[in-house]
Length: 165
Image 1 (cartoon, one colour):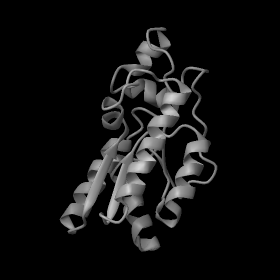
Image 2 (image 1 turned 135 degrees about the vertical axis):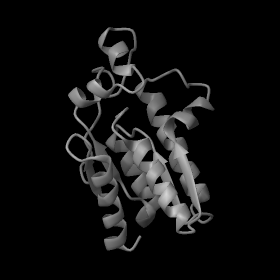
Image 3 (image 1 turned 135 degrees about the horizontal axis):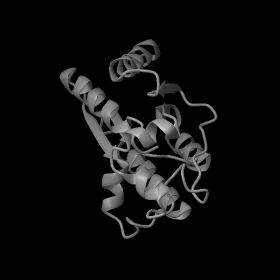
């Protein structure tokens, strides 16, 4: 969800991969959304469409990069299953988890305050209209409630090393 640490960990991973001479494409959900007509529509359908657009970008670029790092809120199992189907063995799902309480405390963009005050509709995981479906079987879970940024990043590096990704 917003503020969980996805972008922070992605930036660290990209820097690490770049230092190790890997060709990396970074796709950020917010940046992709800014380029489309529904950028301010956070309905279930527009969220799913944004995720599908990102999956298609990955599919179209998969042979051009060593790694494609995607930092996006993917709240629905339906779109995660679609990504698995389209990208196959190249799809690795890392669930960056944090409690709503912790996210509200961090509130890096002020979104939770707005949503809880009724000034922002459809905030994923807050509004009942846009729930966050916990992933059924992610490849890796990072819990930023209890893990520091360093420990979280080290866990990702260990995973990459062990899986020879």
